[in-house]
Amino acid sequence: MNNPISVKIKYFSSVVLSVMTAVYFSAVKTLSDTIISTQTEIEPAQEVRRGADTAFARTYYAEFILGFILVCVLAILIFKVLSDAKEKEREAERLEKIVSERTQLLQEKNRQLSRMNEDIIEFMGNIVEARDVESGEHIKRVKGFTYILAGQVMRDCPKYRLTPDKIRLIASASVLHDVGKIMIPDSILLKPGKLTQEEFEIMKTHSIRGCEILLSAPADWGLEYLRISTEIVRWHHEKYDGKGYPDGLAGDDIPISAQIVSVADCYDALINKRCYKDAFGFDKAHEMISNGECGAFSPELMKCFAKVKDDFESFAKDPNKSLDDLSQKTVINHTKLGGKQLLLIEDDELTREMTAGIIEDCGANVTRCENIIKALDILNLQEFQEFDAIILEMVMPDIEYPMAIGMIRESGVPGADTIPIFLLSPFSSEKDMNRALEAGASAYLLKPLTISALSKAVEQYT
Ligand SMILES: [Fe+2]
Ligand SMILES: [Fe+2]
Image 1: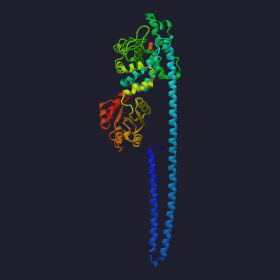
Image 2: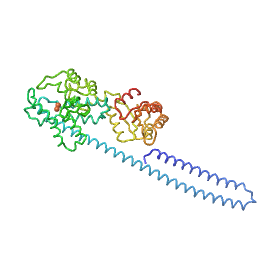
Image 3: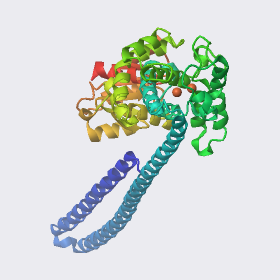
Image 4: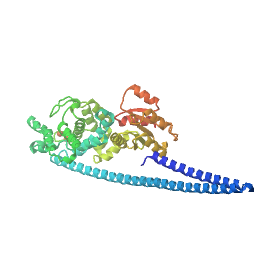
């Protein structure tokens, strides 16, 4: 019903019908006028025939008038059907708008609920930390460091498939990393001074005890949240070389969530005073983690850690910033996407929303559509100048991508021949890439889309 092509066909047919009616009427009038005017020139001797012709002309004229009335009735009926269709379209649009508004409302309620959940979880973390008097604001800072570092890993290490939503979950779950300490006796937890080996062994059990606590976590935390929380609680003391505890996991057998929280936890422990040590300076803490003095971390993670050195330091000086503040600082400022207008053409709804979400979290505005026809409608309405680039999914169900690129390039809208088109492809071969560039794509981006790749393309072509 909302298909713009069918609307165009309807309008076109009504125009054709109107023209045909007008032509029909003028033809009838001309013909009957001709017959009657011809009869005025007829000789008196042909009186009888003239009478017959006049009668014929009048009958003929009457038939045409009747025909004309029928055409008019038909035209009225068709116009009625068309206007009903238009009315239905308007109704459908109205319903669509209501659904969209209600969806937004629901999403906002979900967000509020999720914020409430986060607050409750943070509250739980605070209860744990309240017992460990020296830690104070530790969990709040670990959450911030985790978010900053996870953001860098998301941009630089696509193999971990982190997304803005996931790094938020990791940061949120990081507050529970020491939840198991609630099961550790005060005599050990609050002991001023170095723990004996036996005491340290008991202290180490906090990671497994924490998992036991999580078993009774409310079901509405969701499976993903519980999974990430469990990874962090159990494995935040594992080391990349396998020398950590409780399971001695090594390399990427340690989930990335736990690896990131481990660095954040370690950094915060170093820059703050503890009962067994003084606080180290920011540079010293960074150096100690980077050179392995606090145990082995992944080399890739250390590259990311090096890039966020200043962000860690500035957050440590002002740890009251929310994740939203950090998102502005750590995600948007590191990309060239802030303020850009992008059109995303992707047929798969889930991929489309996920991709758009990642890009929007970097401050860009994304207009989404599921096929090239819709895209052309949007472009025709908004004009190319309003978009900085188009991201086109390579594998679409109804159209080959070279044709889709051609349709954009040859649409005749100003700017269509030069707007950057980034082809989003699941294939990494050079042959595919060259074919795409020959077809008119400006850049060839691989799935899953990473912010660094998109950012680079945007910087180069817009
Ligand atoms: Fe711990
Ligand atoms: Fe900790």
